[in-house]
Amino acid sequence: MSIEQLLSTATQDSAALMPQIAAMHPQLKKLADAMMECWRGGGKVMTAGNGGSACDAMHLAEELVARFEKNRRALAAMALCDSTVITCAANDFGFENIFSRQVEGLGNAKDILVVFSTSGNSVNLIRAIEAAKARGMTTVAFLGKDGGKMKGMCTIELHVPAKTSHRTQECHQLLYHTLCEWVDTQVG
Image 1 (tube, helix red, strand yellow):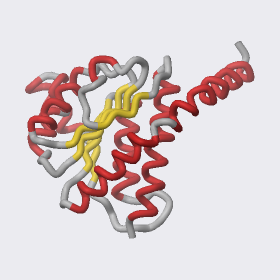
Image 2 (image 1 turned 60 degrees about the vertical axis):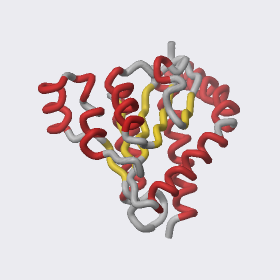
Image 3 (image 1 turned 60 degrees about the horizontal axis):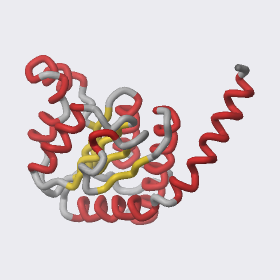
């Protein structure tokens, strides 16, 4: 298959998903409101993911802490991607606990945990959600495919029904960039 054919297929696949993504505005608004309430109450947004979804987790956190499009005050957010913490937790408690251990140490009831998973089946993210819920935190999942085991676990879910991880991640980015754009309009 040529690069032209691949690009044509990619744009057609993305276009087919857009009406479903646009219909997620109620969930995105719910997340936006929860984040503003979190920050007003002195809480923070914690993000997590594996592989490319870890990149999305870091991307969202940096957009909130540093800036998106305008200079505004920094917002409390952090990606649970510190390699020393991850390798220590993996070594001592198993890879399935790399995020839950951080939620246990850093999370409180004022906070929000946002996880990114294209499959919805990552055990380490499931355990992080469970740890966050045990602390009374708001839980959010950006999911793909059929939602996997995480479907129905979180307070807020943005489920992209794409069949592939890369299409899911593209849509996740559109959703969280829209969220960041809205935050820029609300925060001075």
